[in-house]
Length: 226
Image (cartoon, rainbow, N blue to C red; front, side):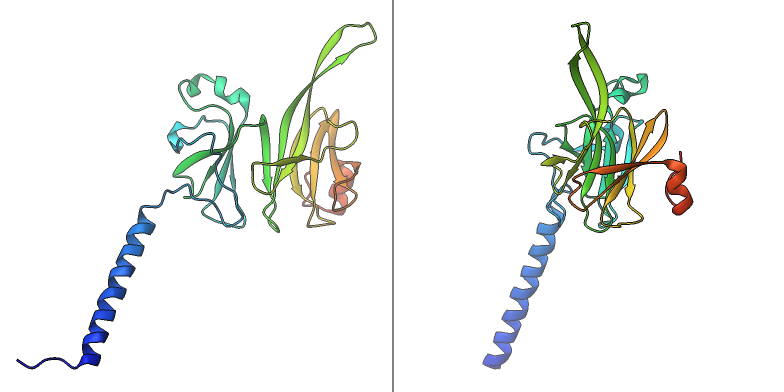
C-alpha cells in the first residue's frame, strides 16, 4: 500500500479541521438566543430575563419597526391597555423589544409609563412620550394631582434624557416625527385645545417653538395637521 505524500496529508487534515470548525460555528450560532443585542448596543433589560411569545403580550399597544435593522421590532404597551378584558392574564405594560422580527420579546424598559415611541432613521435614537404625574399646591392651599406628558430620548433604551422644554411638561403629547426642516432632529405633536407642532430650536434640544398644525402643514404637507 502506497503512502500519500506529506503535503497531501497536511492538506487533507487542514481541510477536515476547517470543516469541523465551520460546523461548530454554525451550531453555536444556531443555539444563540433570539434576544441578542443589536449593533447599536440596544439590549433587553437584565431585570426582566423572561422571553415572551407575541401571544403573551397585551393587545392594544403599538408595534414600531426599527428603520436601521429590519429584524428589530419594538412594542409600546401603555398602562391602560393591560386593564382591557382581553388582556387578563397577559404580560403588563412597558416597552418591549424583539430581535427576530417579532417572534419573541423581552422587556426593554419599564422605568417609565411609555405612551409612544419613535426610532430616528438617521441615528437610531429612541424618542418616547411618557406619562408624567405631578402634584401642585393650589391657591386655596390644597394639593392637586396633575396629569401631563414628557418627551425623552435614549441611545440604548436604558438611560433616558428629558428633553421636555417650557414648564417641563405638556398636557397631551400625541406624536413624534422627523423634523422636515432639520432631519437630524424630531418634532412633537401636541393636542392642546387644537393640534400643534412643537419644533426644537437646535440640535441640543435646548428650547422649542410652537406652531399650529395647519401652519406647518402648509409648508410641509408631510407634517401631520391634526
